[in-house]
Length: 229
Image (cartoon, rainbow, N blue to C red; front, side, top):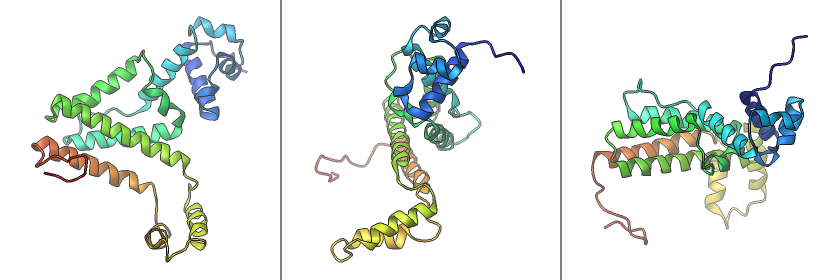
């Protein structure tokens, strides 16, 4: 049997992520992380000073797992799309990180590189600084919101969709709720329907709208009432 691997900061953070994957961010404590590693809690303090340091570290590891938008993409939309799909995949595996990623005050090197790379793609594509800030906020809100919604859906497979949507449809007063009935019957229950495809559709709408803004000023503005002038 090989000797146990020496404890390190990286191993502590990996263990903390496993703990959070099972029980959420609230489950991350020095004691539980130590139990995950099969060591005494006091031994962790040689590698991380406190729980806050663990939280900062796991956020940085999550950011490190997201693919950076690379210079190999000629179109900024392709670069940001690649990054968005990677973020969705990583955050779907660690959805507990959603509320944690924007709350830390001491971002790590991977986090800083990530944000710089995203901003770099937008600025090099000709976005003004305010527009780049708008774009980052919009795209990240969309990705996070979709992951959160997806994590809470009661369906994960086509069979689940048929069971849940079909059950709703059977008890739905079609005459009172005609549009919802139509959506379930003629869209959600059609063969091949996959809710996850909505991510790509919505992302492309956002990127196309940002491209239109990048190319020139908007034709009008939208007032609070919703009418363009």
